[in-house]
Length: 78
Image 1 (cartoon, one colour):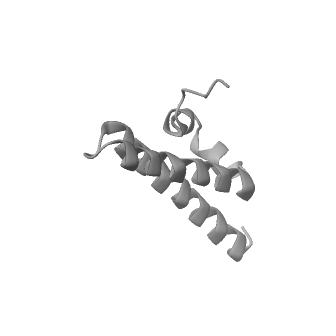
Image 2 (cartoon, rainbow, N blue to C red):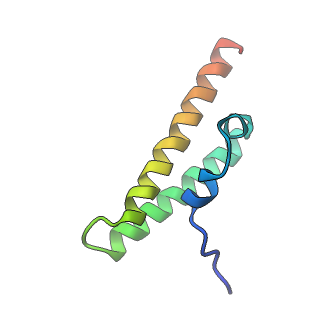
Image 3 (cartoon, rainbow, N blue to C red):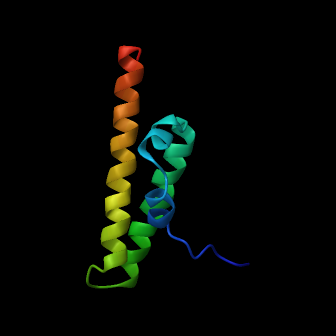
């Protein structure tokens, strides 16, 4: 089995903000789950926090922020 070598951070980095907000909640939750797995993997693999760890955490915060913005828009009916 060949594993995807591209990280979720690299994938998200190329997606414009408007497109991120247009994604469905299930797609955003999938990104979030993959990022959580990446963060855990980096934490278990390295004792010190690496550049990849910080990028995974940054991408996780970004996705959670988009989910929060999108859910606020849904509540207001925007």
